[in-house]
Length: 282
Image (cartoon, rainbow, N blue to C red):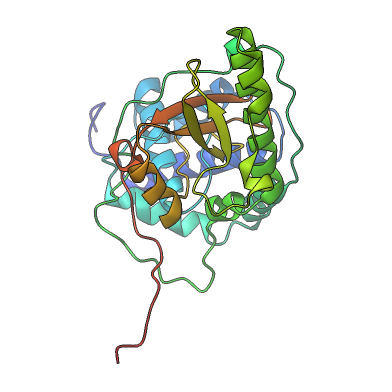
């Protein structure tokens, strides 16, 4: 087969198996060498170039997200993957106990507030909108065990609280550095002081005194990891779009960084319904 032709199932299986080995190591906090993995993988493939293999790994990252798993740092999710890849990932993740245990441990691990040393190193540009899977069509997976590790991480209260405290410090420092010490002292963790029903977590301020409503979403994984928003958060972002900010913290355990999305969440994110409130039809 000429270089660049269609991938065979055996090639896809070898590529996915290597990806899952690396992901398991990463989730367990163990070091590994991506370049060495590539060198060992290439002889198993049909004259594939290094860029084509890396692109396949990026496709695999997109599929892992669709299956509710974290993805490998450095292989940013890329969509338009072949249907065969979806089948192979499903076949290899379902019996992979080591991967499942590593993912379970990673998403449930308690977190503490990260030290904020240099606020200027925290902020990055928000990722450009991109399709990272096939979200417009829901593809059910009828499996005896439904493991959505990203949803489990979203329910990790220690991680969420640590991210909120990080942002609280970040905002206080921002205002203090701008010479607004009084406003800095008024930054409030409203999710604690007033309850979590406001649709945002931190009350902060612009330098001119206008209020800034901040919803904090924290993950220990990469910047393209999907996050969950409540109906309340969604509606608050629409009602107070001029004052509403979503701060997305990522790589929180290793090197916390963040990007922000200002205004209505619907203006930045594609929303997929993952559950419904069902009422009896009477």
